[in-house]
Image (cartoon, rainbow, N blue to C red):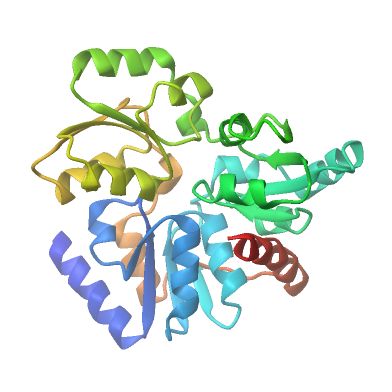
Length: 304
């Protein structure tokens, strides 16, 4: 089948079966084109909670599909490719953080949304990369245990000297592999380009940025800026999306190695087969886990 035929079949079947398809920004353009909503992980789960569709397919990674189920327990939620995980979300578990909490009993546990639903049950509040600063600043506690991303936690801590942060050794391996030398090389090759970076990158990389923000934040900044050239310091699919959205501007990847293999494992045929009902994995959460994780997310919503 040609790509266009596959896409048309997906569009036909999702309409017949009343399915909502979500695609994270890091998905490939062919998947983005057939999705009902495209964006960052938490924003997608919020959109899914608003639609009338009873079935939702997540084209992303497992923790994102879990978040959809947490907010929409009445819906049937599928992960398009069951092997699509998140190394950062999987590097810390409930048992580990319970032990750490015993060592720091007076710390408020702040969990990046990139965590498993089970881990969220022992945390106090969730944050996204765009809301982390506001929410941490809104907490009554002046002691914060920030998990799992050390780089994002460090970025927030530097802006909040009035609070004490405890950080663990976790993070996104894709973003964390970028170095200051990568930035210097990219800037030397593109001296007129602004450097836009995700706060999951290491500190020395973030410090060299013209703009620091979430994936959506980076895309919006580039689209709205008067500048014509940009070095993109996040997953390389964003370079492709921006090139399509802004053909009058130039976008360069910080490195050819900024690729999330877990995001890229989902293909358009995976989506087709999931819509057909012959592949994909239904997300099932124990109700105690769902409610425990939802408490953590509800606190995030309460704090803005």
